[in-house]
Image 1 (cartoon, rainbow, N blue to C red):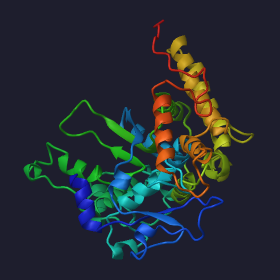
Image 2 (cartoon, one colour):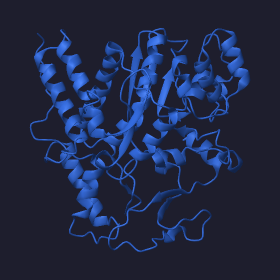
Image 3 (tube, rainbow, N blue to C red):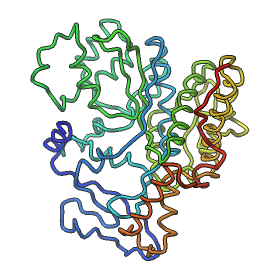
Image 4 (cartoon, rainbow, N blue to C red):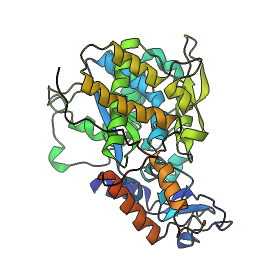
Length: 415
């Protein structure tokens, strides 16, 4: 509540704009009459006027601990180009305030509601929202791909580089420290910085990028260097959440084992996140992806090509399968369960299975009470929530989301 109140005080009442999904009977222009006459009103958009519209959303975040700083930076940089890809694969939010919209994810709403910049600051392209895509690669060898100019605190950068920090990592912290803290707790004001990392964590944890670099806290020697992967929408079922999480965990092993280089320019990674929001982006969009080689060239590829491969790239899922087949410390039961997870990811990427957002949209548009006007009535909402509850609790099947044979084996026999 303190963070939400601080955001509200700094930015004033937000007016979030979400493009309406235009169906055959949707008015043209569509006007959200509840906000007619307000500042920044837009035709063909619905409007949200509460920070909680974004901050009340659920999400799926996974954190990976590395063996060293070097490994942590490597994992961070290789996961950055995947933020838009995994956002598209996890899309689950097509309905806002009782309307079908033309986006499939919560992330754009979070970007807008987490933006505490003043009107003047928003005019500057060099200062992005407190909630935004990851702004920098952290390894010096990828510095040439940081092709977007952003504000940094030069004093911070100078101090850190003088004490031996790499330039790219120093710029990451320099950008972090251009902001004031959102929350200051009176009892923690006078903690010693050489024994507690509270003041740093207070800043680091209130900048919500698609990736978060997390150094070990000074007061806990059991935590190491960590990377938090943050873009994914939460899923309807535990199985889907497990599939996304396990895939990402295995992918970090593949990256480190085979030395994958997936890096693309930051501007292209940002464009991928924009495209990931688009309706049914898994089946209809193409994304920037590195196709290999030392020249670092990227090309536009479908999610299916990125995940399942084509004649130029093996595919992320076949690479994970290769890693598993070469691993000697995985028993047959675990391998079977992981195989189900990878099958869901593969079939979703191929368009055989739907994302949650596409399934929800299809449910609404095929409901007898839907009038092709983009309105999700109370009756439709109730039936949708009931269906989701039944699926999530295992009382109903949904072959468009999860094929019947897909399940998590909870009775593993160690070998």
